[in-house]
Every structure is written in C-alpha cells, then in structure tokens.
Image 1 (cartoon, rainbow, N blue to C red):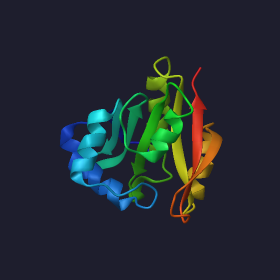
Image 2 (cartoon, helix red, strand yellow):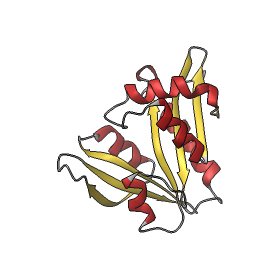
Image 3 (cartoon, helix red, strand yellow):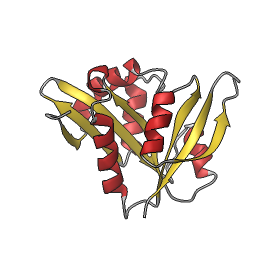
Length: 164
C-alpha cells in the first residue's frame, strides 16, 4: 500500500486511536479515554500510520521499569530486566494486509535498535488470532511462553524479538 506516512502520535490523535482500538477487539482489549491517556503517558513509542482519509493504524509501546497494571507486562518484567513492551497495535480494516502493519513494525524495530535489547508482546491464543501469529513469525519474533488467564477461557502466546 502506498500513499501513507508514519509519524509520532500526539494527544490530538487520541479519539481516533481509541475508536480504532475499540473496533479491533478482541485482538486488543477495549479502552476508555482515561485508560488510553494513562497508557500514552507511560509510553516511550507511539506511532501513527495515516493517509489522506485519516488514521490507518497505530502502535503504543511501554518501556520496562514502569508501574503498569497489565498482567502481560508484569509477566515480561518478572523474566527480563530490560525490554520495550508493545502494548497495542491496530490496523484499520481498510488497510489490513496492505503493508501498513509491516511498515509500523519496521519503523519500531529501527527506532528501538540500540535503545532496548528486546521487544516483548503477546498474541491471543484463546480466542485465536492465527493471522497475528503468522505475522509475528514472519517478523522473526520468538515464542517464549504461554500465559493462561485466570478465567480459563483466555490465553496469550508471549513473544520476544531480540535486537542486535
């Protein structure tokens, strides 16, 4: 897909990011405007993909060492001393499978190199997200564990990408 750009996210993007995030459930969890604001305040990497029609996608990452309430973040913090946690990424339906996600990740990897030793993230196992599993495999993320949720109905695959 051509005709889109990547740029740093700003506070002015929050409403559109929130709408895209919540349209992407169950691949990401739903957020309120207040929770999104708290996550953005902790973030170290917040990038927007957009075209003339608006936001196509976004990524928000939180560095290790923050007081973040996410159980998935805590799972990584208990095992690794330094990482950049990819908290959420979403691509609008109109832009999926057209290179936007790959561009967002390539930009993230380039910016993280030399700053963090690894990128950590999770992908839904239950409910399944086979497209994301395949994507992260092609992006050379390695599965490092499974985290079962207390409800027994949900689980995530834990992934790392070691940065040279």
